Image (cartoon, rainbow, N blue to C red; front, side, top):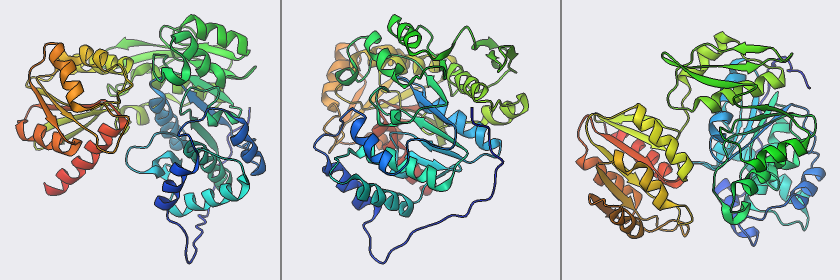
Length: 443
């Protein structure tokens, strides 16, 4: 296992040119460059990565897959490793507001000029090989992590695992979070099939942290077949309720059990935070109790049960976009009741099980503000969602032509003490974050 290197000062190198395409120009080009938005498979992207000498990073790599919870694990890993003084390269997706969020180095989003320079290098290296938008983005992250000589790399799988572009890299530690039905068109229509795709990130003899409460048989079998050294939630590591938060245990490097202090962070699922801690144990970069208590209680991630107050109204933003994620949001609302009204702003993708999402949470909501997403062909229409709510016996419904209008209408009827709940997709939360920024500027 590669040891952590002593942190050192780094010089930033920015490449500027008299005339060059902007990042926006490049992203528009990438969207049109490949005939398919998604094309799973590793041969094309691995061939370009090999040409750029990106397949064997010098830094240890943690790869995170799963249906829900990946972002929380990645965020906790980044925060804890950064707190140790290490330079961390993080690749994640999708972004909320800016593409740059996908590639972070040293706790900062990478600049436009650096991403453009990476895209130019990739474009020159690929020859006639066609790459998708996501594959270009993945290679750009790996290119910049190598260029900046980061201490640790954290990679979040975009879709599935086995055939996802990040899987061209052999991880030092692999993490698999929860398994649920999502993206069935690509990953299969059963939990077992989806689990096998996620488990494709595992490697023989490499530590694997499995943070799934009820692992399907397909996951258990795939982990065993992989030959990975598995650390299962509830066995090697786990969480338990405690006064003021949660506590738990980890498996130390020598197999000894380590007890954790009580941690309070209701916004992020305890099992995901604990999975991040176990991954650090496996990597040989254990976080001390002091470090945990300094970092985790204050950790808040954009769009993950993020709370903002505007004019006395508490706004809760969550990217929950499938029934399993909405079920966890329901648990949070049960634990954090609102004494007055809860007003929901909701929009989701048409390929999701919207009826199940609404059924899980409708008892918490006093009024619904639904929105179309013009220009997003994947989004379900507000009218179709309204019909599903009416079928479920809900009558307090407003339909808007876009999310900005829905948010403004919801805010206009919210009184101090009410809660404004925004969820359903990354697009929904992104629109709300933009709207909130404008509202706060007005205040």
